[in-house]
Amino acid sequence: MVTGSHRATGGLRRYLRDYAWIIVAIVLAVAVALCSLPFTSRLAPSWKAGAPASSASVLAGLAAATAAAAGPDATPTAAPTPSAEPGSPTPVPSPTRSRTSAGTPRPASPAPGRATNTAPGPRTTTALLGPVSGGELQATIRLYCWQEFGASEARLRSGTDPATDNWECRGHGFHDLVDMHALCSWRHGTGAYAAFTDRHDAYSWRCYRTRSA
Image (cartoon, rainbow, N blue to C red):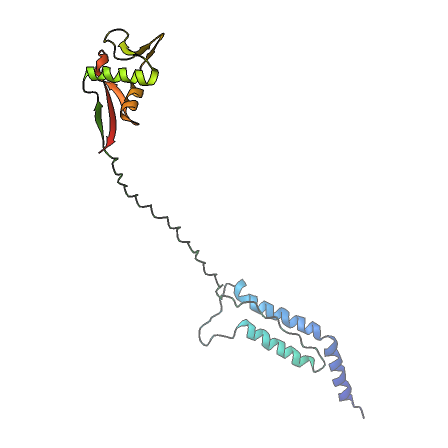
């Protein structure tokens, strides 16, 4: 049997279920106003021991009271959680120290090269081979002209001066200049050479050879 009290209770529940969102909106508006009151009135909340609960706990209590008033059929609405409490310090990223690369080591300077001792070359000496006199020189030239050219005599073209291009071999119908270097090689072998001691004296020719000491 349905009584009047039952009908009144059911009507109240339907009323709360239909208008629960309005009640929740009013509660949230009041909570927001309470949270912004310290900032608009320049009054900072006390964070010392024994101070009132934070705005997060107040919002949680209001949400619980609204859910109890709406009844079991009403859908509970989660209270927004503030991103950060007022006055909480903002973390600052720590600066990153840049690593300085070590300088590229420079190559060591090359050691100075050691001085190479160059051994001196062998010493040479000049040996006199002959002739020892002007008369021997003329006899040697005459023999050379006879064996090499078939000439009967060796003579000077223009007296004793100059020493060069003056001795010649003479025969029947010819006369040829004597090559003094060829004369020394013919008389003393390979490596012998001729040189005069006085450019104005044709009798100053001598034969020499350079030898290692």
